[in-house]
Length: 288
Image (cartoon, rainbow, N blue to C red; front, side, top):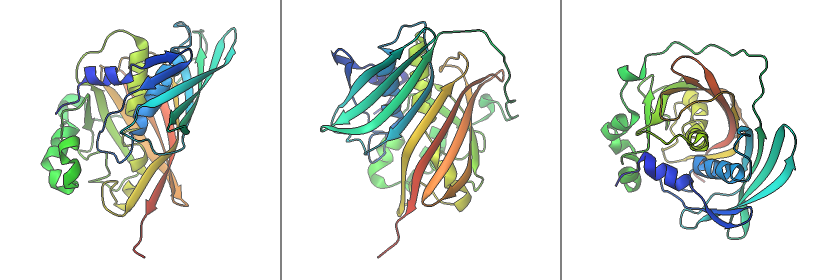
């Protein structure tokens, strides 16, 4: 069984049900509920479908309310809050079984020239010198629960290449930081919305787990409960998701059964194209 880049784009294509209402399918990637990046990306697509193409998204802020049921489709309701001269604002609610499982606020901005500056990209090994994460997972498959081994080891739409050679689930390092190159495994079309949606999908992968790394724990081990609570994403510059992007993440703090992580996406020539932040539940289940 494989999960290709074409499959990912098809997953992000929503079925229109009525004006401002869309329906999305799900894909099991080995998580107990719907992968948060999928709902995030589909909600972005739903919002963008109600906005003119000359106003791309520049920021999105979402809250994960309930775990998503993989066996049921997700319905997205878009509210058109504002259509201004420069900015457009949308709110999206993702629904299953009559209840909200996710809420997104999104802002869109027509292009304007202005001041420019950015932080520098860290110096790391190039992607060509690194091994794909999928190879590392297949070598360590016995560390995963037997029930999900066929899923986590299947071909995937994104080629992740961790700089330190450890996988995103928290195995192999105790630093509260991680860097990995990522791009789609095959070329995408030229629709900018698809590239932004793929980056949104990517941005949730391994982000919260960064907060577990200083404690030497893994999101896949028994007794660890981990779940995204919110997710914010800002788009700064144009990019292609089928070209290498360096995803640099860090976790400045954890406490109160919550962890906070943030990250940046850079192109190979060092342009900062997107920033992300997330807080999530990281709870250790203790025997009663």
